[in-house]
Image 1 (cartoon, rainbow, N blue to C red):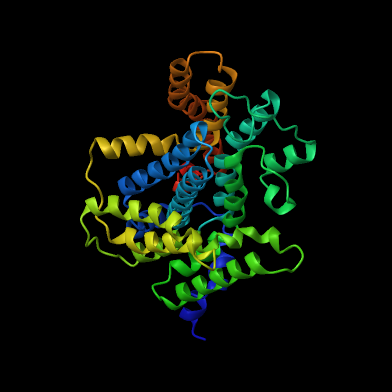
Image 2 (image 1 turned 60 degrees about the horizontal axis):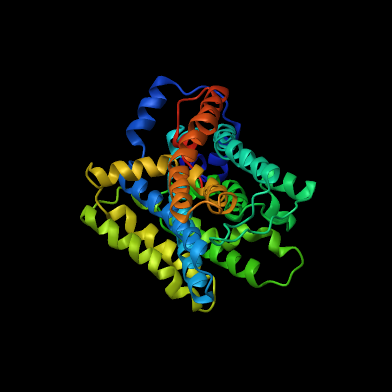
Length: 387
């Protein structure tokens, strides 16, 4: 093996990634910024806004409709929003690892900043839910939802975001995605090493491996296989890894910006349409694969009221995602004696106000603390919200 091939080997790159602790020099920073993959940020803001709005629409519909067919449809739309989240998060975090300094990115920096991004508001939400007695899902309008009483073990698992590997319940409905993302963070640096290569063979091998792992963990009767449910959604995250690979390979925007709208709609609609497809996991990764293959070829949206709204919603999306059920519980449960119009007004006001307060009181200070502790230049890993 030649010296050049040895330097480019994944094992050597991973060793550099883990062991690097020296500061990034000015020359390295300038080179990395010049070579960094440019993301269509306005498109991604709109994508993330649509994702959280799908989840919000899901639980809003459940406030009024409990017919089985309606519940099934809106739940699949909410799941489609989560799948958009998975693609978006994987893409942005690939770019985040790159922008730390492609030659020597620090896994310590990456994981520490992700911890300060995801855990503070999640912990605050768990404590709020347990202390106040907020139900896992919003109550039907005019009724009072049953409150669960959680054991100390369940609360601790939700705080640590490991309830999936311990087979414990989520204290709040949307919490099921968070431990899956935390588990996926362990795999993303390996995906990054493959995605940054211009060769396609590694990407094909990665996709095949993730699909095979998804099949095994979904269908295997091996005891404990359910603990690896992150692999069930691995092909969904692959959509974002693929988008990064294509963007890094300097994919040219051949489609006009307006095509982003039908692409997102097609992805969302595909989820309920494919829900009955066998094997069932195809309905998970096929829309994500389509989105990941298409995004890099779409031109970036020009600045407009739509992109401004998308950026605003995306900024507060983590708070909206975690806190909309407590908001609905307060508006339509605790305040159910009020007229329906007053309840709806409280809910709308809460959706605007509570995530704003959560961001500025919890999220933003935590982000800044993570930046100070790592003492490296800001990266997308520090600011990227999570579902």
